[in-house]
Image (cartoon, rainbow, N blue to C red; front, side):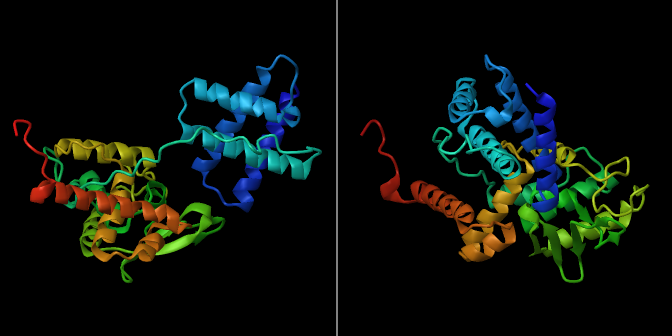
Length: 321
């Protein structure tokens, strides 16, 4: 197989996604891994098969192999989507007669509802200090500000960690997101390069003010990032995830708390209070209202639990009766 040609085509395709569709580095890395896996599948075929010669039958076989390995339907669908996009691009830039991925579908999957904390647990996570930790240390003030902002504004973890202290345009660098404390809002760039502004609540603004008072002690080479590690570099999504999980564990909250749980909690709690689905859609940055409607199911679940616990006619009969 002309693997070099396949890899060059993949590199060119990913570059087009970066420059034209403005996809994030994280998304591009995922596409790259999925496409390299496609090369691996093609390499495993008995005959020499460059990607331009892969057929519909081959793709169905590859998808079946993924399913046999126990890969879940969502992951298979993601890989098929990455492959489909690549072959579409290849058809536009080569002599590909048809897209071999067209018509190949992943196994049907049950859509689990996103997990959300109760309002009490969410407030505990973002407002209480970590037991045994110095509450006014730089890292703890940073944590408090990040956790409050996640829950206050429903940000994605990548949106939060890409925030700058203010809007910056310096040479080729342009801020993807920043805090405007005067306007009490955060401006972020979400999926598809779409920018939106989201209100920031008073507790989050207060936590940010406390963090900004000590942030300068960690600033080193890069003065722009809002949230910094102990080394003075921009805090990564992975470090934020680990900090939040450890914090919730220290508080004795049994749920697996990660940044997206706070985003789900934000959406569920705002929807429960306001009932305004369109406003929640805007704040979350969802392109489709369908992605936001899942939170109406969460709201119904909460009401059903209250009903089951409180209504006399909903209580289960005693086994002895």
